[in-house]
Image (cartoon, rainbow, N blue to C red; front, side):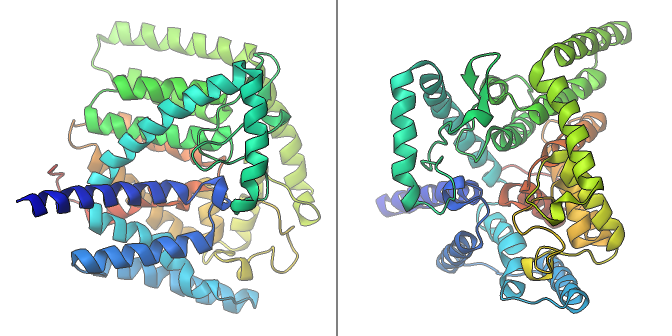
Length: 419
């Protein structure tokens, strides 16, 4: 009896480690999505799967892996590029989430929320101290420099368990505070995962405003992330639209919400001014192919660049691995970043795989939403909001988001049963 209890606790502890590893796979301490770190995770998961027993493949994951290998082979032939990454990229991108799903099932999402909730609380406290206690801020600035040689990062910012505010780019002069990055590489990235946490927790509890989501919303506000604010706007708009209130009250509520949102957008420097200036500058950069000669990034630059690349390679895409990308041939600067969100997925993997991925991504959301019978209208709003959040970052193929794709592909047309 005592031994079985110890095994149970060891299993739960290991499950939490797996969830943490999935989050650390996008940590700036490991230079964002680092293939070496992902390969370590893959070996660890295979070892755990061997210990616990169970299948390692099924026809659904086999089809996904085969699909990606075919695209890689075609891209290698068309671009004349090849590298060792050809062999492991499908596994670190899609097989890792598959193994996690086979080990944890939908419990992964419960542990994900508990982990994000814990991270949100303690990093919020540290963020407040860094904003309002100068001596503590000085201490963190020194600490991140000392920690950098032990990390895989190119910029001193991460302590692994917290990303310190490291420069003027994340300081808001109007409010006189830093933007909160949590454990992620910058505030916008933290906003992406907070928005995902709000959605998953909504599915688990049936309440958009329960205790955990209030904390997630507060932390989202502290990021001062333009994209995260727009995503929250989308969530709330569809929430009001799909509510079961009296139609007249619903219309009044929507009108008031829209008026307040427009007022906030017009009067806030990091919303209207930031969006309009970034749109103008980055569209010009994309139109003039500035990224060929210098490192460029940004949500609008990435969108317009990815659109052009998609029309150049609509069927098979290009650049799943570096060796087949425009960067390898010098057509794009090697330090540029442009494969953001769904359009980045389409430009990299081609139309058919992009559609395949998004279809099962949506099915994954739909599967999780069954417990509290979330309305289809709200589900569509959530899907749009998540895609909007991913449009400014490179996380659409990171582990937590691919987990939704795996969930959808493994459970298409099945009913959700919570254990």
